[in-house]
Length: 277
Length: 277
Image 1 (cartoon, chains in turn brown, green):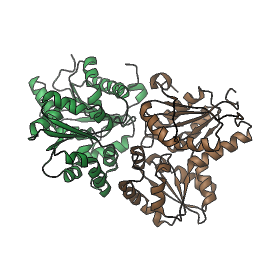
Image 2: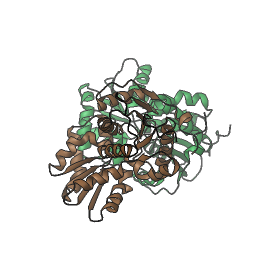
Image 3: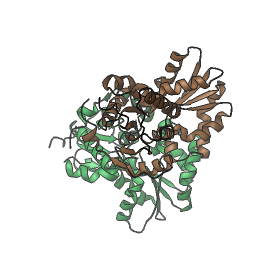
Image 4: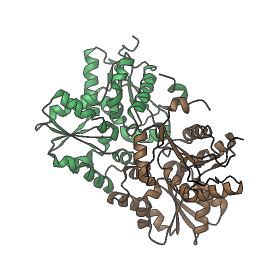
């Protein structure tokens, strides 16, 4: 199979820019890997859409990356991870790693009182993606979930420490605070950007779990076990593709990753994605 | 031409639910008209997307309505109105009414000091859609524009009078307050939902212009002039189509319009919209 080659890139897709927090973690753990990123900015967000629509989009996104000869795909979008992972694995031969299982495992490692909170988009929470996974792995934990739909637009607006953000975080998180959780899964790739405000509201006794970090560790373990780690002596190259607004993506992506990104290309949805599945 | 018939419906499209505020105005001014609404909820929002993407979607939306034999189309989305109106008029024979010109005309009627503010999505404001139109109609006015990207998610979350909404409104509107405007165009169909908070922040001296009301008046005048007003003796029937999440749409739409809506149908994007233009 042509994707089973050390020097092939890791593919990462997300509905938009949120997946860049996962890219940041991958770069930290695996600096020599090449990354091909696809952000579906013409159809963002996924978190307010139906399961069938998200599955359809995820298949198209994965196929785009497979055409770039990736050796592994990271679904850097909790919504797509929560509804599309099984379909993707059935459909494609390439290994596919989502956000849910790695995040759930890391949370179970960290919790001491077995009381875990999860925040995410409406889709992720209404699918109960994390609570199902957590209870499958350990039926003794108590899981409390809360959708926080305004966190994504606040992060995209760049209001990471704004008074309004704090007020909104207080309102969203008050239920979870009452539940005496000691671990909170940030079940949306945008949320690590609001880590300071979320941490401040939850207080020091609560550990925040970034599923992107957890997924990066799983990717590293997987590639090592399969002898597929890139053994290049130089830093990896990254390529970024979006379905709309490459200029805006570049601006935000450079702020996220803290460096200049020359390689951002806009693809044509109709030509490259919208073929029938 | 088959759309030139009194009993044919008025077509209305929007990226999602915002256009329902326009439907509400149409129902008030023209209770006997039948309405076919299309909300492109699988690809909402349009306001953060590029002009070319919005134009492509708007063509598909208009074609869907034309296939329902509408006698007139209302583009109940300021973003689509600001970038796609000329293309739609060139492409299709049916009369097409947008939000920008009606809203601009109503604002010019109301202003006494010729200082007009405009708020809208990033796309509407960066296209300077209202200021270009206002200055074309009257080169003596001063126009001040401000994008308010968080207003749409706040309205969709239903936080119409929330403390956080007030805080965010204060921040967004402070620049406009300093400009001593006496008229403010709500340049996004979601914003009438936040009318109370916006009005409170701006103060009593500032008149708020709802482009939906303005557009409904233009539709009535146009149909009367062309002898195309529906002369049925009973109230019109409405049909609602969406590209995703009919259940969520129904819930919000019923809250918006204050009545039960039995007729909401989900269409298949690929089959009904994604043919080549």
